[in-house]
Length: 302
Image (cartoon, rainbow, N blue to C red; front, side, top):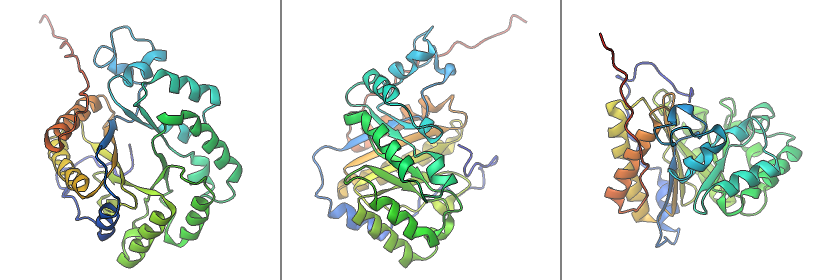
């Protein structure tokens, strides 16, 4: 993920901000749940470099999703950002994965970036109809707002959300720093999202600490965590997040979607495995850990 990418992270303060006051209000009034649901995985399944590591040797491209969904229980489905999948494609994907797997489709760029949510009724209906085809395998959908989409456009966002079917799952990623400068305004935004049943995306990336807002509008947390090829800070940052999630679950968090980016994602399975280990140990979950085969090191005779 290029958003907020920096080459040198040694001077970055990765300390998590305090919770926004609205987060406690939402979680305390959520009613809680006996089942703490966590869905976690890397952002892609089509990675040839994972053959022989998390996919069996000689796995064909067409079988990547099958094996991915036996290692992880969710996917940040970025392909939908570029093209709305056909009903047949969605059906094929749905029938490939286990019942507990969750697809989290990203809203098309034609809606979020090119049209800026204006005049998109037809495309929106097409996307909604498409992803509802995932049925019980649909997690949340992920609306990434353009970096140019500033608070002055809040009425546009509200109209867009009100036009969605009742109860349709959606979480919003805000990328313009101005959303968070005025505390009162941001609080009102979170209240509005809560009223509309829309969640927020929390994005933890090195170069844009100004958009890590820690504000929840529903008892569902969606986190995009961007690591750095297993740099030591990847682990300390993970530890901090696991503790924060533990606190949120104790307050009433019901579900967490966690998408693990890691540079070029070659090492994303390893970082995801560490996340799963810590979630199980610190929160008492029983997530299945991905199985990673040790890769042979190519040596030299000379």
